[in-house]
Image 1 (tube, one colour):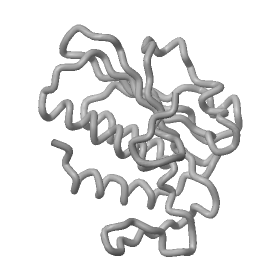
Image 2 (cartoon, helix red, strand yellow):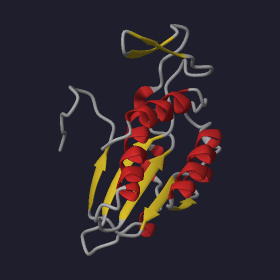
Image 3 (cartoon, helix red, strand yellow):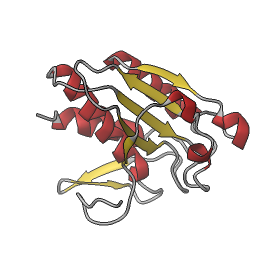
Image 4 (cartoon, one colour):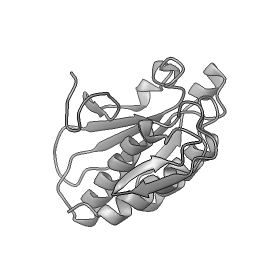
Length: 173
């Protein structure tokens, strides 16, 4: 059901867009365009102005095609250092950086998974309630994007944040 090639291509493109903490604007603009292209209504809040980042949090919404609870998916856009000029390398089916930087999978893998899932829902016309997406800024520096998110713009009572340690598939509550 998931388009694995598109997911891989999406992730590889994301990690090559520099987005260190407080400098997420270029990546945010890229994501905003992509989200609008697949059919989401997207806005940027003013969290960046409050915390000294060059970008705000992205908030995307997809109207449901059936009755159901609104659900939220979230991940963060910033990466730790050294994360500028990332060059991904695939060896034996595993993605690495070239060794001069981090890979930036934290949390661009989460963003890629969320958008691939939403795009699949749209393409396959899967029944769903309203979907909200938050891609936050300044997570690595202390969760400042989340702490300054425009929560008034959201209605979901249940959400999934795609960012945690542990084994794949592990859920932290």
